[in-house]
Length: 137
Image 1: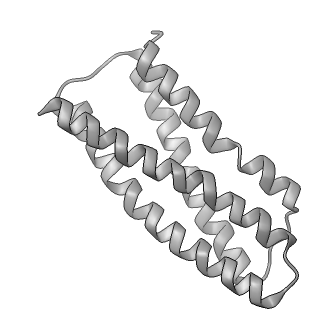
Image 2 (image 1 turned 180 degrees about the vertical axis):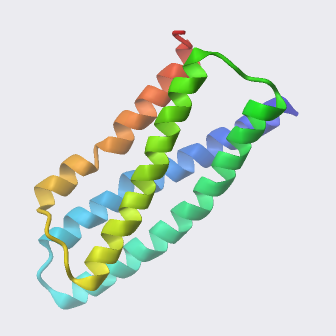
């Protein structure tokens, strides 16, 4: 049972992060776009992707919780990983907040800022995978 839960946890994490990789890229395009029709289309894409990504995040977190509590996974690396997961959840919600600002027409950030913002989930995922695989402490 452990390996099945672990496999599905990895699939949902990968899917959730795929959304976190792409959503800020849509924000880059929204920050550059001047055409109202294209902006409307990009907002629709971002809204649907955020909703879908949220639906992927929930089972990823629940399966991770099941692995942690149900199978007694422990260690210092886990505390660091959990801290990074909290940051990933915060990033996810920050994306939702940014989306609401775009929908309200009040974005005050440049496309360059969003390009840098887009790198955050890459770093988070890289650190999480290193902690899980290497278990340095």
